[in-house]
Length: 128
Length: 362
Image (cartoon, rainbow over all chains, first blue to last red; front, side, top):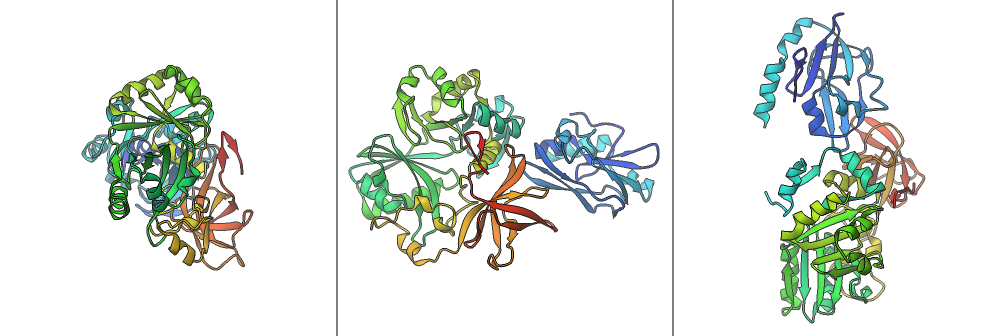
C-alpha cells in the first residue's frame, strides 16, 4: 500500500494536503477506507464552521460502520467535496483523490505537528 | 479462535477475516456490496459451518420437541420438511431461533446459531435429562454447511453435484433431502431461492471450489447481514434475545398456541401483555440507521420511544432501512424520527420484508 509523500497524516487516519494557495485539503487514508469497507454515506462540515484541532467534524459510514473524522488542524471550513453525496464509493476507489473538505488553517505551522509518510507507515505497522 | 473447515479456503480467496463471536469468519472477499448484488441477481455462497447441526435420535424425539420449542413440531408430517421456531426459556424469552428438520420418526435434526450453540446444548441436554432420558442428542461438528443463494443458485448446484437435479428439483421451500453425502435443504437467510447444504467437513473445500468454478461468488458475513435485513429476517442477539418475547420480536407467527400443547415459555407468554411490535423503517433523510438508535414517536402514537434492533444500508433500495421495536399503536405509513448522533432524521414505518426474490416490496 503506497502512502503519498506529499501529504501529512494523523493517528486517527486522516490525510492533509497543503495547497499552493495556503489552504488545506483533508480526507481519510487508504488504510481507513480499507478498514471500513464499502462507503455508503458521507457527512461533511458546513462551510464557515470554525474547527479546533481534533474536533469531530465529519462522518463517513460504510455498510459496516460509522466513523468520525477529526479536524487534523484548526481552521475554517471553506468547502466540501460535492461529489461524495451521490458517490461516497469514490473514497473506496481512491482515498487520496476523494477529499472530504477544505480548511483555511489558523496557523500553517500546525501541519508540522502531524505525521509524515514515513511516520504514518510506522504507525500502521505498529497497529498490526 | 474457532475455525470452520473452509478457513484456509477463505484466506486463499483473500477474504477479510473477522472475529465473529469467537469464530474466525470472512466478512467479505473485496466488496460486500458486490457480493450482495450477486446474490440478488445470480448466485453467491456463504460458509455457515459455524452454525451447529444437532441430531435428536430416539423414540421420544417428537414428544420431546413438542415441549422444547414454541412452534408445533406436529406441523411436520412429511420426511424432509423443516420448521422455523424459537426455543424459549420459562420466562418466555428467546434462547435461540432454529430450524428443525424431520428426517423420520426417530430422527430429527436442528440447526442452531453459532453464538448460542454451547448454551443451547446445555439447555437441551438438561431438558432431555429431565423428561426424555433415552433420547440421543448428537452435536454434528463433523459437518460443514454452505448456503448457496440467488436466482441461479439451484441450477449451479445441480451442475456441481451430479445427479442432484432429479432429486431436488421438486423440493418445496423448507424441504430437504439427503442425497449421497449431501443434505440439501431449500432454505436460506437472504430472501432468495437456493439451498443450504450440509456435507462432511473433509469434503467442504473441494465442494466450495467446485461451486466457485461453476460461477458462484463467495460472499461474507457482511453481505449475509444486508441480505437478511432486506429480507426482514431476524438476527438472534439483535432483534431478539433471552430477555425479549418472540411476540414483541416479529416472531408471533412461529409461536403456536392453537392447541393446548404445553411448551416451555407458554405460560409466561400468555401472562405477559404484548406492548411492542417489530416494524420496518425506511430512512427519508440522508444517513444510515444503526441498531440501538432511539425512535421518537409522533404525537398520539404512544409516548414510549422505540428502538432500532437492526439497521443498515440496503444495497437493493439504495437507502437506509431498519427493523425497530415500536409501540403497538404504530402503523405502517406513520412517520417517525430516529435520533442519529445530534440529529432527528425522518423515517417511514413500513411492513417488512423490504425485498424478496430480487423485488422491492416497500
